[in-house]
Structures are given as structure tokens and as C-alpha cells.
Image (cartoon, rainbow, N blue to C red; front, side):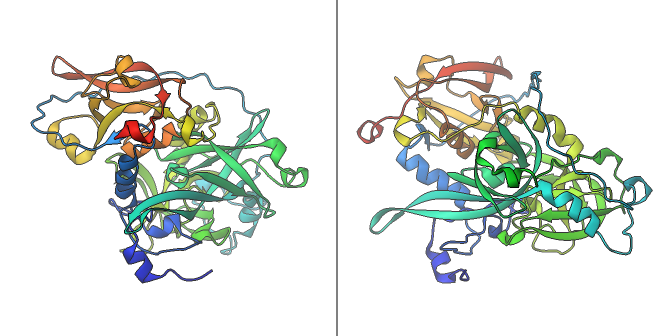
Length: 442
């Protein structure tokens, strides 16, 4: 593996990255193992521009909004979801001699090997491949990037093994591969994602996992993050820097630390001095009983200071995870069969939301005549916040979702619609169209 070429990184305009603590994230979160330009770039924005130029997924970005005078209102409709029964593999058990988190979680002789040995069978490494395009002097060029992340097993149903990770680990991935404790690597698919909480569940067919590997896998034991106290010991396990599983230790240094994501969503996170490095995202933060009490996220880590890492509290994530586990597993659709929505849109980020008094989401400023949206109850100036029950915040989220739906599929969009000066939440069914030909897209 060679080090990144700084000159290549400087010239590249297509390298993806994720935001860090207070809007920025190290580019190593999606560490490139092949052709690895190492650079903090603006992939999220550039990718949106690239995809918008090609109109690949039938959602056209562009245009500006002038003179919008809208009153704000946000209404949340909590829709109950019936959770299907999920069977489990053998669960991780607390190691002998491990101290209870309620006693302060002090390290027993600074040795956490028993905790690691009992928990490692539930933790996996995730590798994602992303295809991205750029415009060069020689015309369009497509390249492949490889990123790394982590996850942990939460259960299985009759046909699949289910794994929790961060949404940003799998977002935009064209291919996912999971590596288990015995170094066996198996293809995985996205089951459900939630952009607001930065959570995702991915699935692997049980038939794809060798029996010998399956016998070594365990389901993670979930703890109660609400019982945590500052000063308790914690252990972080994950695929740091994409080099394979590694372990760091530390203490809970703060609870309910409010951090704002790049999408403007506030999250109350666990703060720890255990190192949370790029590649650790989606991995397990354990208490001294070997229970998962947090989901690590390098997305919020800072390169400006040392000894500060963050994790999503498991108690706050549990309901979302349960919901995502019930979703239909998604597989990417061939480009010529992908669904087409037929809208032109613009992101409403946190800054725009505050300035104009509008909900965050994807603002529809034009509905394409004859497109799928024109045949539905969608209206111009509606703001899309969910696609098929899964939260979206940006144009990229929307286009990534469309990769998994064929034309002719009926989907439900949750939108904020302006009525009498206030935004009202609605659910609108749309039958997706087929992707236009290159000629008809001009």
C-alpha cells in the first residue's frame, strides 16, 4: 500500500470525504486504499454537482431561490412500525471478573483482554467501494475509491445476518464487503439507513457465510447507555484506519455532549478519551461488562485536539435500529432501470433553514413536466424529508436512495408542504418513472 500522492490529491476534484467535528471530518474516514489521494476535499458538494450535471438519477440539482418569504413550522408525525421477530446467534457474555459499569468501571489491572476476547466475535470490518466521476480536459473520467468502517452484529432473521454501522460508512457505496473475526470477507447489502441519526443496518445472506465462520460469530450484548456515569471505563473496538480490528481504552469524559452535524442536526453523544480514529466509525464502544453502550463515530472527531472521541448512545439508537432491521434489503438497480422522480431541487441546510424559516430537507423548486412527480400530489416548494420512510437531508441522500428502486415502483415521500403560512407534514405516494435517455435530459 503506497502513501497518498499530494499532487494527485491537489488536482483531483472527485475524492469523497466526510465532515469532521463541527462540520469537518478527516478524509481518512473514507480512507483510500487504491489510488489514495489524501486530501480534505469537498466531495459531498462536488459529487452533487457531478451527478446533477449528468441527471443520472432523475433528480436535477441547480437553480437558485430568490425572494422566498415563508413562515416556518415543523410537525413530526411519529409513525408506529411493527417490528418483526429477529432471532439471535449466541450472545456475547460478560467476561469473568469484569467489573460492573455501575461500580465505576475501573480497569482491573489495566487489562481488558477478557472484554476484548468476548466481544471481538461480534465486531466486523466494513469495506466500501464508491464509483465517482469527474470532468477532465479529456472528458468524463470514472474512478473507484475504497473506504473503511466498522460494525457489529445485532441479530439475524430467517435469511440474513444483521449488522449495525454508521450511515456515513455505507452512504453512496456501490459495493459493501464485511470481514468477520476469522478474516472471511462476504458481500453485504444495505437494509435500512437513517441520515438524521447517522445509523444504518446492513444485511448478509446466511447462505453466503461459511458454516465455520458462522460458528465463530456472536451477537453483541447491548447495554444501557442511560446508566453511564462520567469516569467509567470504556473500550473501543473497530477497523481503525482500515488496517483491521484494533482496540483502544479510556473513560467516559462527558455525557449528552451536543454536537451539530454538517446537515445541521444536533446529536447528544457520549464523549470519551478512548481514541476514535477514521475507520472506527460504526464500531462498538463497550463498558466494563463487555456490553455495547455506544456506536463509535469518527465523523465527529476533531483533529485540532487530542483525547476527544464521540459515540452515539445505544439507548437512543435502539428504536431506530429496530425499525431499520424491518426494512426490505436493498440491492442496486442497473443504471438503465433506476427510478426517476422528475424534480429539480436544492438543499435546505441548517443555515438556510434559520435564515428563511424553512424545514431542513430537499426543496423542490421545479417539477419536470411529464415526470413521475408531475403525476403525483407533489408540489413545487415542497420539502422532502423522508424517502420510503427513511430520513434524508440532502440531494445526495435522495439520489443515493434512487439507486435501489426501479422505475414503476411506488414509493412514499414524506414532505413538508406550505399551507396558510405554515408547513404541514404529508405523505405522498409517487410511482417512479424510468430514467430518461441522454437526449431527453438536455
